[in-house]
Length: 117
Length: 115
Image (cartoon, rainbow over all chains, first blue to last red; front, side):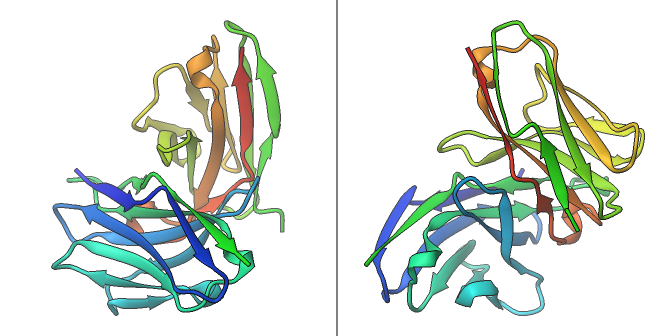
């Protein structure tokens, strides 16, 4: 079974400060990992994804995430927060379902990022 | 290019009423999904479809039914709405199965309140 845990339902930072959103996963097989962002009253938008080609993944809007197998983590970072980064962020994991070609996308609980001036 | 369009965007139902949520995608995607989003619980998969005429249950299917009569449309039905179904519903589609490490495109969501 696969699962995702996002540490911290709310994170607050000042504009220009480092953003760190934590995600730990559980999977019995090598996972595919994603970060999605949801702006108020909108659907989810893909921020970045782990393709297994490189452990450090760069996404849109200056975000990046590092896959650490030993720590089963895929934390999202951005060196300098901008007011427009205020949103809810979801980590998600996908693994092949045993014996079938479909594996569901399992989401974490979400982390609301607030950016203060 | 509209992407994924959900109808309606808002709805208030009385307990026991029925309704259908419509999801339409214009990207020729084979795979479509219905999720519900509740505070502190992320998104949970209700039902999904791997192609026209096929549907399957996700992790929280009880109280919902779906149909995929046309490739571009995925309908979510509530036969007898209950307050526990108050939620924000999202439809998504993808070109490949989500297991293939591919992006899923999401609609804007439907906010449903059951009173």
